[in-house]
Length: 256
Image (cartoon, rainbow, N blue to C red; front, side, top):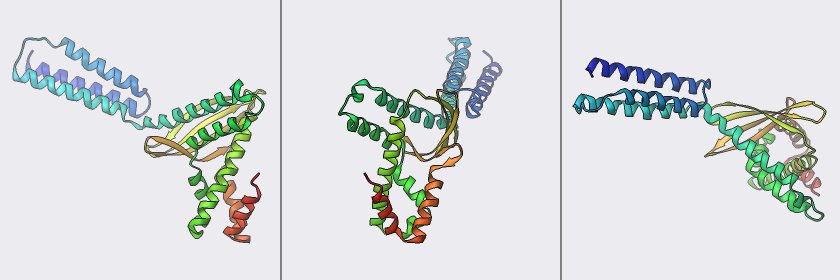
């Protein structure tokens, strides 16, 4: 094979790799499809490459193609489609919750606390309740003492968990449609729709952030109404009328 043809193949391989990587980045191709396509494209080049040349130029060219494969696969896998992870993780968690709710054994008399505890464990893997509390308090978070903040997180978490569990336990076959997510490597919005038995569609969005390999929700918007914004307005009114202690007292009063 001539040097010109050798490097022409390398250029073609590089162009294919860049095109596939760019498609993956733009999300016009799935990451796995882009990576697989790149491997197949370069594999075709290698398959057409005649053996027996054993020259330094041939060896060097093969090395360049191997590097191109590695770089292309990395690019095809590393696009913003890591933003697919929020939907995948949230969907898996919601599926686990629904499995718990529909578990016949946990519906037996006397097992309601066990069922609620199991749902609570999954909920704590979905929501960052401390972050939700901090955002709900807004500017008032910094003005509270560490002890007050800790108590507010505990009380507000308990309130949200009861509301969440209560809503989940009233589940009666509604369907969740997953519409995907948008965002970057650190923040994402997962869009869903809850479809009732009557066919009514309720848009629900989860605002999430990334902590290590986990995606956690710090806000939920239902039909355009933000959970955090709603509580922030309430908390602000209470604190302005009284104090942090007044808010703590009101949240304590809501404990069962």
